[in-house]
Length: 204
Image 1 (spheres, rainbow, N blue to C red):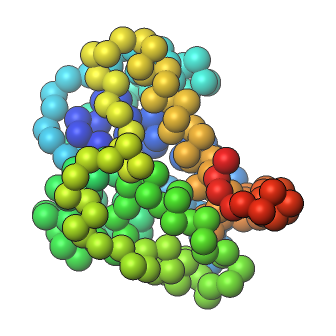
Image 2: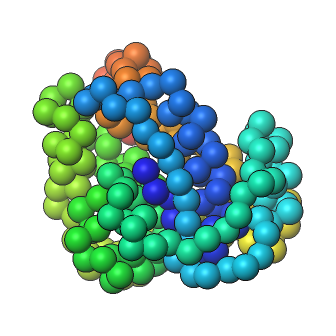
């Protein structure tokens, strides 16, 4: 799994750390274990944002040793799933490699789409991903949207970084509940039962 933001100093290092921790002891519906990496669409020689480090540390995440890097073609070739922080990142990645489109989503978009795809009803991860991406249009990525974009907290202070870390943590937890990972099965069934009783289905 590859996580991408702009400079690889705020959002994507946090998402990488959260995903790596959540996925450490689980497998997907094909029985595979996942590794996670991150990169930025732009080259940036700086260190991780100090307020991001502090906000991550408050959630038990140590990203002090993270080094920013720019995404490469090899990254895109090797990734089974690419999670971007905004629609503009998806556009940039797909412009670099059009073949990456079917496996490149914003994190928010994939969480939203995962709700309608039960892993038990598909044949494996590839089928799950294809089902989650059914009906997508590249045109929908042309404009920014709160529905899909995680706001960049860079140099916006500690509070903005805390909000970003909390948002990504919630999104990752929802992705593991609704996505094709074994850790989500019991939580998914509980969520579906609760949603049925409320006559609604959503990530909550």
